[in-house]
Image (cartoon, rainbow, N blue to C red; front, side, top):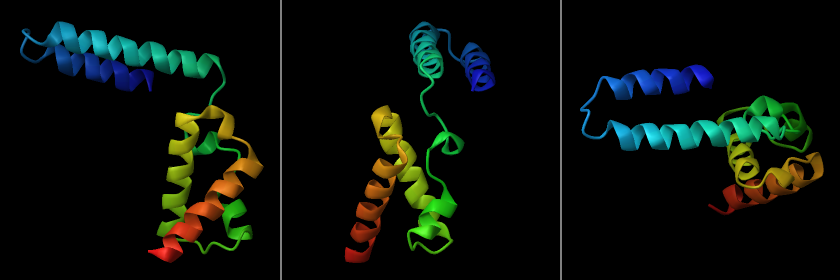
Length: 104
C-alpha cells in the first residue's frame, strides 16, 4: 500500500501543477488514515478477515464467483466497522448476504 501511495504521488507530480497541492493533501490524508488503521491492527485485506472461503463453504456456499463476491462484501463491511471482524459476526452477515442473493 505504501508503494501505491508513492506511485500516486509520482503520478500527481507529473500532472497539471494547478491541482497538485489539493491532490497531495488528499493523498496525505489517505496515507495517514491507512497508517492509523495498520497501527490499530485493523483489517485491510481479505487475508485479515476472520473468515475465509473454507468457512463459507462449510456454511453451505459453493465455490465460485458468488463466494468471492461475499468475501469482498464482508471486507467492505469490516472496513466500515472494524468491530465486525469476528467469525460469528461475519458468518451472520454472510448468511444475510446469501439470503439476499436468493431473493434476487
